[in-house]
Length: 88
Image (cartoon, rainbow, N blue to C red; front, side, top):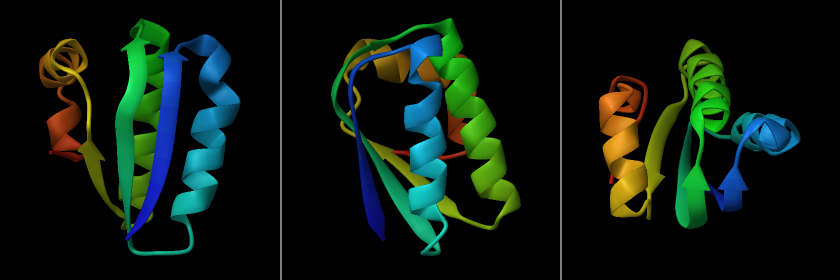
């Protein structure tokens, strides 16, 4: 399992970072997304995450999300991220 580390604020400006994460996931069958260094994620960041998770699921990749703070985890649960990835 490979790991991709996000950091800072995830927003519309993070599009390249999400693209890099999808590329990093192509080499293995699963990827862990480390959110331990993410301060917050806004609605556009969540939209980009959902788009990336959909691509990964269509490619047959298993995705784990780890290290998200309580506020980010609550947002993920409200937005249904757990149907696309395992929240750790």
